[in-house]
Image 1 (spheres, each protein chain N blue to C red):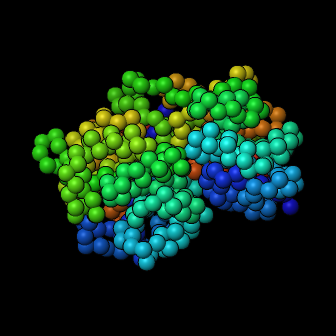
Image 2 (image 1 turned 180 degrees about the horizontal axis):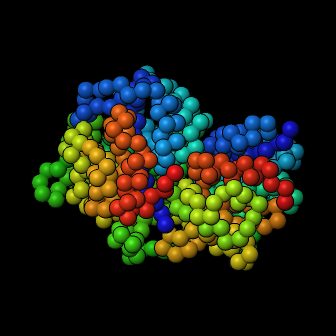
Image 3 (image 1 turned 90 degrees about the vertical axis):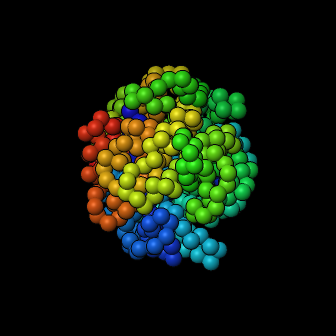
Length: 253
Length: 212
């Protein structure tokens, strides 16, 4: 049976892993390769690296990090942040990424999703959606780290991205991110029910029950979390055992 | 020193495959190459592939190594991975692409529309993530790998071998499908051993030591 996935997320800036609260107030969480190896040993199903500063002057840094991690850690790696053209996708894949995530650039240039998936295959194109609730049952897409409203409905946007060739949706609730109060389950369920590609729930994990709820109630195919793992609150192994006890298919190591 | 060539025809995550081989066979010469001479002098060959099968077949043809690969497939241990597995078959539904014809059978797409998983959620295509591989036949490549071990999959299509005997592993996604095939000196998987942590590395280790 296909297992649900746990994906630790590593926000990277200037070659270090950091964790922010509501996209600000960055705290240092350690060396990327060391952290990646630890998560692999704990049974992480994938790793996601988000280059959260992603300005042109540090593009080389994330490539170096991916190369270093990919030579030592044999699980899928997703990289996002600052992907603006198909050539960026190729560079990241060549460095050892298995999937590349696009966010703001997919909004400003949806054709990029189509071109990149045509060129490299849907399996490696992830579209990241940052969404905020605007009314009951309605969420709006935000870009630029949550600073810019787009007026686009999140569920409609997810459908459009699927049609253009996205292979997966990384769905972050801006309302929940950093709050430790659990995923936005309405948003997660709404998107997951609307599309046929996998959905990764993100934003708001405070404890193990939140992860389980993301799968059971939100119908997410995978759950992404950062701080509960980075700061040693829980290991990935503990999280997987906890979820398995609730009847969720998990790969236990 | 053993020479293991990861065939470079412009498609696929060649580096991950090569790094996994290097991790399990530090004494071997693991080479990513699209040169005919390297394929001819290789002791073992890995054929990866990613993306769409029609593109992969076109790239393989245009790369100029297809003949050398077919010649090598007659005698040398050959491991196909993902689209590299699918290409071993006669034909794919994806773009009606002709394959290499090394194994009789065709490649088809998941048909899971309208079906729900046990927990009530939709079946997603591509199948993306870790799923269990049931070893339907014993094979030296399965050594030290437990039955029903998890491997990492990313795919929308899968191979349907014409002969049951060619399937050595199957996985259930909606219905059982063939995910590992073998014939003589050929072994191939739909899943990605280079992304399947310790279990995947064991499979590459077995390939390095396999003497069909």
